[in-house]
Image (cartoon, rainbow, N blue to C red; front, side):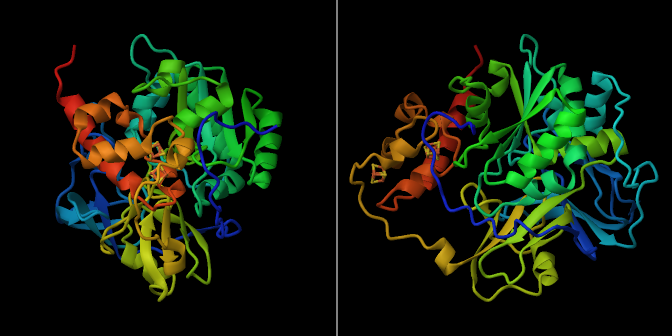
Length: 445
Ligand code: SF4
Ligand code: SF4
């Protein structure tokens, strides 16, 4: 029987129209624009300068600070600049700009198709390799993986959960990874279990992906018995960390708490593949699977795409900007971000580029709150979105904190359910940022 979380959630149409598109290598670009801030935490420090020659996989920016991640070149060629360039929201971030010349990889990277099963490293060595390879969580937050695999003193992991839910509409990159790299992903899971010292892991997959469920169950039952593949109900946001833990282990992460507070570490299937490639193939993280999809596209695609590819280049590769597209989103339609700059480039955690038509993005006119409580029913964190919206509009930060705005996971279920089309997520997200700033500025007790 499929499992699910206990409160809230919605059932949007899944629109997985790119589900049958196999992963294709994206054609080599002529220029790469690689951000030094592709992760949660401090930006990396560039270690190359204009005129330097680089190879694919070479370190170009070094992690700085406790929470940070290394950045490697995704291409070979000449560095033409290290300069501030806009990200998808238009914020200026230092980038390493590289003119692509050939496709010359670091010799240390094993590019053979052979699957390496035996893991020869100690837990500490695994964590060091993952840190060196610049791996970050590919489920959205881009938190450095080596830190997540190193619980703080006093906390101990009992379980590793792998998020294969891919509950956001349209996205199919994780699904394709599960179908096309199933064993590598399970070895990556085993490696993370070794790093954490846990003996049990679960891979949770929504029941609308029966092929992936069947395949991974079959492979796990033969060689990876410590990893249990479980079916999850199709329900958004099933892939949220707290919802996944509730569904699989029936444990509740406390308010303002982290999964490790209940003995759990959650990673996503893309991260498991990246860990496999780093530890078993010595390949840093400089590419990933990206879904390019939308109602206006004649051909749906899943690309293996190098980090630093700009969106204009992606448009070129799919035959030009579809004339019916009115909105571009990086990520899913529920939690993704609108792309305001076509000259911005992909980062490690880019999972999708959605090109949506008027029909697919239609928002009704905003009306008054009719106190129907549909937003409360839909909230998977047990919050009262209509109230948070009211308090946010009035700037009442103290009351927002009392009403636990900081627990909002920005899933958008409230906005989706609101018959009055009140932009609850936009208001709540903005106010949450302000409240978190206040909380973080307080002296630690
Ligand atoms: S966006 Fe926040 S408030 Fe709205 S449903 Fe999700 S968790 Fe609840
Ligand atoms: S769903 Fe919309 S109209 Fe209904 S209570 Fe919430 S904010 Fe008000």
